[in-house]
Image 1 (cartoon, rainbow, N blue to C red):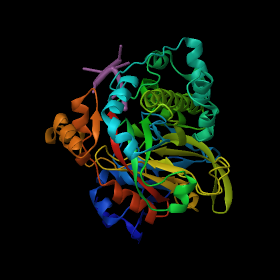
Image 2 (image 1 turned 60 degrees about the horizontal axis):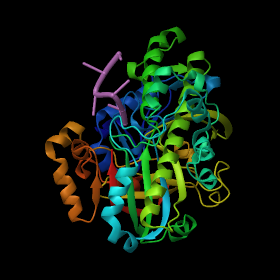
Image 3 (image 1 turned 30 degrees about the vertical axis):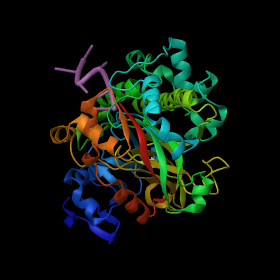
Image 4 (image 1 turned 60 degrees about the vertical axis):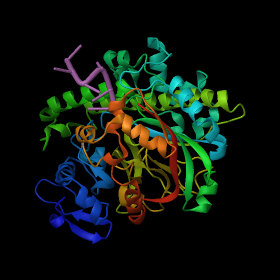
Length: 476
DNA sequence: ATGTCC
């Protein structure tokens, strides 16, 4: 990215002052090196977002931002319905409520090592992965609607997991304001056999060891110690969310002129929050949030079964489940005034700091766990929401390493079986139905996750608590 | 991300 058009506030905060159609500034949180790696398109897209009606304060880019569909991935933007604000399907993304959930296993690395192969095979066997993967669960129409309304709460009621899981899930496992009647039959049809499946792309299930602790006090509060083994699930709302996103993008682009909205980019399709189209999308999008929460809950259940086969006394307990592709109605202070805003986080993790009323009592004094997915060959991070970050990014942080190169480039550079062999040599077992997928997801295709989380910490968005490294990765 | 193009 050409930084000459940016005003450098400090080493980790760069501002694009409003120009042309921009209503608010664009703010990028990153160091000079990360900015250098970012495409100029990120700045262009950030400026387009800043031009949307009813945007409040600024359009933000997280340290892992990269070029996306309309909005940058790693983008945060909040809109006020009273000020003509909009909701944008491109601002949420296709994989609605894609997110990460991390569980304690109660096991240590030395417990896992002798059974590492068996565990990898068991997890691959129990959890369907890959494009179009289907599971054992087949939802009849009434069950589909109950799932879309109830989310992880529905899943627990159906016997997939424990009520205690809900306390550690964003929205307590159930997103309010969902309306299954706003979800098309086609979206439901695509989803009816896909519950409890991982999907493809960057989605994974990973057994990880806590390799380093940065903030011992918070780590203890999160129940994390060096050498502990945790399980992390990264996936979303599968075919249903994708279908809802596709349909909404099409209809919002078609209807924008009716609402008097001039789109700087057709991909930025949006609808006023106070319109039938806007409300319909919100109700469908919230249903997809529930679908993703239920999906991660069901996968948790299958993972528990797999662990119990090998470790009869293992009890997987949930640290936290948080999404990074959403639009959520939240109260935020803007210039000393409390305002109800619709916060879009696309490839950005909610990262509420200590004291947030949205956190359960057990986490409120400490802050929200912020789960950052790295790559299968390097590491992932567990962070905590930083005090005061509501004023910096509406309480948001980065979500991952961010791609350094396209999937096509990665396929030219690596072969899946070579990646698997190389990682096996380093004690990391990869299992995947697609060697092409493994090549596309080769660790070298991603930026250094360390640099991203260091920038997020230096910018005051979230603070490092622990670094986790993979032992077993199931890839879609 | 995605029954990787209805």
